[in-house]
Image: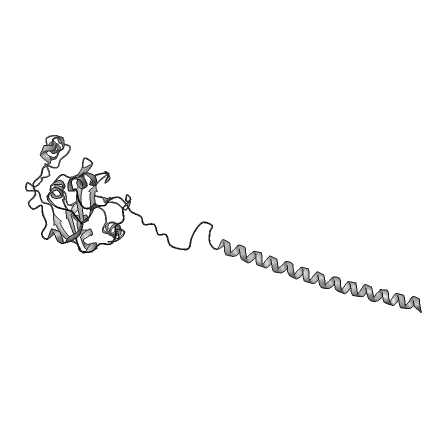
Length: 242
């Protein structure tokens, strides 16, 4: 009887141990699945945004330097200014005039053309001829003082922003532009040069004009190819923040 009772007690203990072992196995198995699922979700969230990139738009403005093409040099951004805008330009072969018109349309600006008192003819502009007018003016700086029909725009004091356009001659602004700059006071005005050329860049063509003016907040400006599209010009203007 005691032997039978001892065997029964042993069987009960074995059954109890087996049951506990099964429950622990299920608990561990469930814990493993939970951790695996959590790790997978975390990885998916991290992969949804490439490392080092932000979902916020960039705050960097591109700017470019003057350009007649879609490719532009860096442009210095300007703060929003009030008052009226004027686009001043000298155009020897109508290329700069076209760009000036696009800028005026994009900004609602007035236009002011610089017209030499003695207009340049096509022969005058033949820079390959050493005896042409522009070649002689290039070789002798004293000849670069070009008189204008009108050097001072009406109501000049009302303009807060002034674009100044010109073709590039031998790496600098065409000299009729100098006459205009020397004749006006740019105090309190934001001045934005732009130029046209078939190959030359804006370079430092705006620096001599800035020095001649002596006043005003002169920005770096923009160069355009001779036949830049209206969209290219307006894209540049819109990037200025005027």
